[in-house]
Length: 77
Image 1 (cartoon, helix red, strand yellow):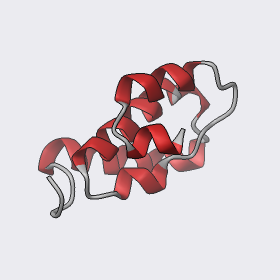
Image 2 (image 1 turned 180 degrees about the vertical axis):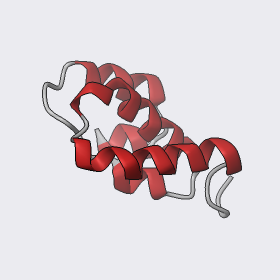
Image 3 (image 1 turned 135 degrees about the vertical axis):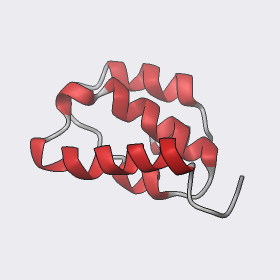
Image 4 (image 1 turned 90 degrees about the vertical axis):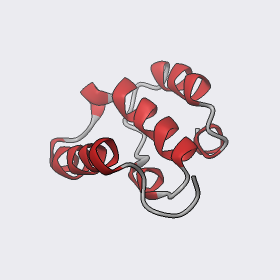
């Protein structure tokens, strides 16, 4: 999954996440500066929304809101 996300293969990563019955923690990849990585990690996170542990939700929600409102961190575009 990490390889698909790092390659920016959003649709493939999301499709692969559909068949995984446990939570895939990709929070570290939401912090990567490359937009294609953040986008793919967000897609996987969205696909697995029902599996996210309750204690992880506030941090993930804050990061996703930050990506939406300000874009990815400065750096690679």
